[in-house]
Each structure stands twice: as C-alpha cells, then as structure tokens.
Length: 610
Ligand code: F6R
Image (spheres, rainbow, N blue to C red):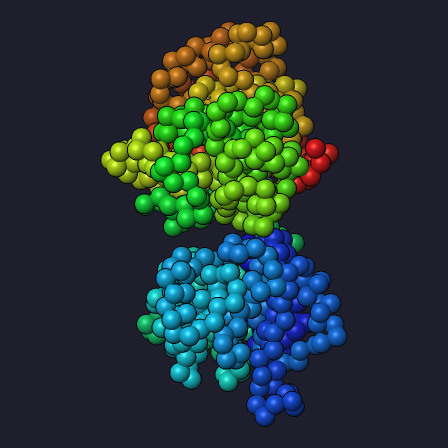
C-alpha cells in the first residue's frame, strides 16, 4: 500500500524524506519518488523551482539516482507506490506533476470517478501521461489553481469521489505543504520549527513523538511553525497533537505483536476496500464477460489457502449462478484430462507469483478456456497469463500465513458470483439486493469478531498440549474446516486436519481420544442437525469438542465442551466470520506455543517453484 512522507523546516529535506520513506517499506511498494522545492536555483530566473525524481523499484534504487543528483531544498514530499491503476513503471510512479511543471502531488487511495474527470480535463487541454487515477488529481488542482494552493485543493476535492491521502507542493508557494485525507491514513508530525507528514507514525517517530491525526474530508496547510486544519469549506478545525508512546519497532506493526495479528485486525478495512465501488450495481469494468458469452461451467484453480477460498467459491457459485463449478489444485490441474466443455477458469493467487498457479493458467489457455485471475498484487506474473484480472485490493500481506487476503478472496467471489448470476439472469433484483445488503454488513460483523477475542484466548488453552486437532464442517463450511486446520498447522506446528463432518465416521473416528480436540463449525441451516450428530459421535469417544456457531444458537452449549460464537449472518456468508475466528484460534495457539508466527519454518510467502 502506498506510503506518503513530507517535510518542511530548516533542514535539508532529501535525507529526511528518504529515511522516513524507508520506515514505510513494510507497507509494500513497487516504485518510489520524491519532489522538492529547490530554492537555490541558479539555472533559471525563478526564485524557487520544483525538482522531482521517481522510478519503478526500491527506495535504494531511488537513492542511487539521487546520489549523483542531490536535490537541495527544505520542503518536499515523497512516496512509495503500491500499484492499483496501471502497472509499476516510472511514468505511473508518484509524484505526479501538472502541465506547468510547478505542482507535484503524491496520493494514497483510489479516485473512483477518475474516468469522468479525465475526460473533462482532456477536453480542457490537459495532457495525461500515466495510467493512474492519481494523475487526474494533479491536473484538477492545476485547473483550479489561482495563486492559492489550499483553495485549489479544497475546490478540487469537492468534485472527487473515492479515497485519498494527498500531499501537494507548488513552486510558487514554497512555504507550505497542503495535505488532505478521506478514508486513507495521514498523520502530521509536529516538530520544533519543522513539521512532517506521513501515512503512518513510524515514518516520523525518529524526529517527533507529537502527532496530529487528520480526519476524513479535512485538509491542512503545513508550514515550518504552524499547522492549520480546515474542512473542505474552509472552516477552521482546532485539534491538539497527541504524544505517541510506542517505540519504532512496535509502531511498524502498528502496535501489534505480529504482522499476522495486525493483518487479521485489518480485515474490516480490507472488506470495505474490496467492496468499494463494486457493490451497488455490481460492475467489474475489468472483465470482458458479456451476457452473450457462453460457458458451460466454472473451474477454479489455486493452491493452499487460495484453494480453500476456491472451494468456498464452488458453493457460492453453484448456489447463485447455477453453473456447475469444479475446483482443482493448481499442482494437479495439468494432469487432468481436458473436458469437452470449455469452462470459465478462475485462478486465485494472493501473490500472483505461485509457480503452480501460473503453470495452470498457461495450461487452461492452451485448452482454450477463458481465464480470469483474482490476485492481490498489481503487475504480478499471473496478470500476464490470463484474459482478465480482478484485484482483491486488501493491501500488502507480510505475514506468511494468509489471513486478510483469504477474506478478500471470499468477498471478491461473492461479488463475482452475484455479478455472473445477474448477467446470466439467474438472480432477480430483489434477492440480489438482499445479498448486496448482507455484503455491506460484513465489515461490522468482522469488527465484532476481532474486538471480542477473550473467549478465543481462553479456549486455546485446551489446544496447546494436543498432538492432533480435527476440524469438521459441512457444505459451505467444509472448506472453512480445511482452512482452519491449515492455518493452525502452519504457524503452531500442531498436526491438524480438516474433514467434511460426515466423513469422520468413515475412518478418522478411529483416531479420536480424550487428547484429540475436535473443532466443529456450525451454521443454523439445513446442515445443523447432522453436524450436531457428528459432534455427539466425537464426544462419545471422549474427544473434547469445541463448537463455532452463530449467536442465535442456544442449543449447542449443552452438547459442546466449549463454544465460540460469531454474529448471526445468513449461512451463505458464515465462512467470513468463521474464517476470522479460525485465524485468531491459530494465532493465539501459536503464540501460547511460543512459535515465531510471522515466518513459520520451511514456508515462504511466494512459492515460485513447482
Ligand atoms: C497459507 C498460505 C499458502 C498460500 C499458497 C498460495 O497461509 O499462505 O497456503 O495460500 O502458497 O499462495 P498464493 O495465494 O499467493 O498463490
């Protein structure tokens, strides 16, 4: 996710900007850039001159460009880009510069109405050089600029829809950085005769512990020794700074002990990001599936956690689109016999770099299938192997264990299934509306789960000494059982297996003893009574039984030894809160076992070998 840094004060800006930008590297990025107002210009008659450098690649790469070409100046902004619109490249990197070359802007977020704004700006003669949504903002501000940068920013933002944290400088106003935010984070670091701006606290902690949090739809004029905050109408807002009590190491994980926990807590925000601009009338402008496209079924291909999201997707697709849906492990797909029917093939990969999934994408195309990739990483290899790409947009995931990307994949699959069902005419407007309304409630459902971890922390005490743990589920929560087991085994090193609950009696039951906890996932639907029977069967073999069920289930506490509840949602959507609970179960178990968690032994974030 993009990182923004700014400095204004008596010192040279460049080293401070680079140092601070490095503190945001953990957010993930693909390009970096810097713009500084140089006041010692001799080459031109101007008093001050905007100078910028940017490139695809690392901050070290940017530093090497600057090594022979230091920009002197005491006000500047810099940026790390995590591509959303347009692949990583020099021209798409920030800062973006207006047609006059005097105005520079960095941005984090997504401008949703950029296409409409772009058309208008092009008609007015603006030359757009990048593929980004961000560049539209810089031209918009240029268009509204009349000698007052803050005024031009306010006027421009009133016409913008979407999320943004921006920082803007103009060479004719070298005494200020103008910043604004809506739904993307931005903080102001308060120094002594100097001020800082950043996407996140760690970027400024070396210089100051006094921070002001900018709120949505606020703008700020940041000078050396003053910070003025106002709303988009120009009304002044008074806000005091707050003292940061964390150290740098803590802050990079946002105060969380591990990236995995941070990423689980980010799921509320991640779901909102996945839904942004897509739920309402569901549109995937990036897709070329039209109502007259004929496909006889859907095949979903993936590995690991993404495979489990795919299995959940099968239930979602079959329920909503009525199309037969099969799921294959990417590493096995190449050995399968091609069918006569040509299915639509969906490849799911968080990293976009998994070698098995890339090979499967090539094979699917060779077989004449239409291919869509669901990935989190813009410009990743999978994007060059498929016909269409949908980005899941959950931001960088650093912990090896996939958490927020799994939830993001599920949400994207709901959206895609509703979209295809509507295109095919299998979903009438009223039920479609209800489904979309439920999707909109999911961020608050997940928020309730992550804000209520005490029961989970208490429950995991009964897991830490187990050698084997079984997870069972039925129907749409059978894949949840598989994913719960995978998450636990990869980070706690406790052997765990997931089964369809009905399969327990066909073999695994032989392994149950008082030392083999069984975690059963329930939802109040047509599978409920059957899974309760399976739970009783396990209990009869003295296995400790833990139920994960919805809040309105008032029967299960009489049967299970322990119960974890999730907020009531229609059972089709229950895999979302269930996934979050299972991730937290894995996390707190691994923590109690003293495991490293973020970097489990033998595992890598991107598996680029077959
Ligand atoms: C488990 C995990 C892995 C990945 C798998 C596929 O927590 O992260 O099982 O899901 O390696 O990775 P992607 O989705 O990047 O293709």
